[in-house]
Length: 62
Image 1 (tube, helix red, strand yellow):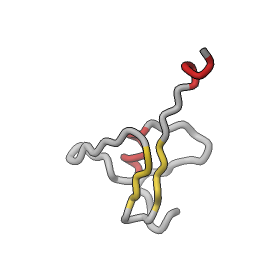
Image 2 (tube, rainbow, N blue to C red):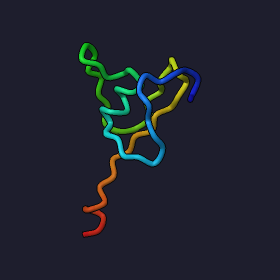
Image 3 (cartoon, rainbow, N blue to C red):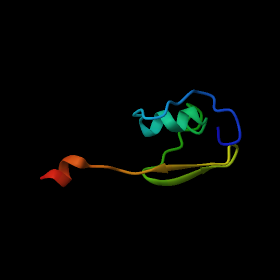
Image 4 (cartoon, one colour):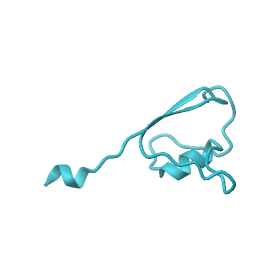
């Protein structure tokens, strides 16, 4: 899994909030409320690139 063990297990083909993903990688904690909106976050300890996009399907359908 990208180099190191992740604290929480994430499953493939599931829906997670941004906060859940950052918490699983140990980036978002009560002591460190790190927040990002979209883009790429490089998690140095694991060597993983985390890609985040904002998808607004409802607006595209109108």
